[in-house]
Image (cartoon, rainbow, N blue to C red):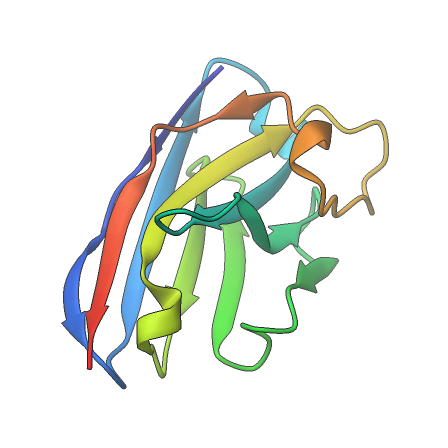
Length: 126
């Protein structure tokens, strides 16, 4: 399995940004997917996750209402739409895939994920 995240960049506070992640190498629709981020000097933290069909989603409290995770099982992609960005959102963002046994699973722990992308940098200037 390979995951390729993109879409990062330098934006202003209050801006929006979409991060797409392309998945390849296995049956995409049988994986739960997640986004994590890691800011300088901090541990990697959960951002959002989505189940097999896209109907089940989970969000960190810090992004709920501002970020939206979605997936397209026909295109093998998972997106993170971010809005109302602020400096606390500055981090490297990683997409990840969990070979989940359950369609409703939306894992929030990094240890539950089997595969990781390389990360894309998001910098929000205030």
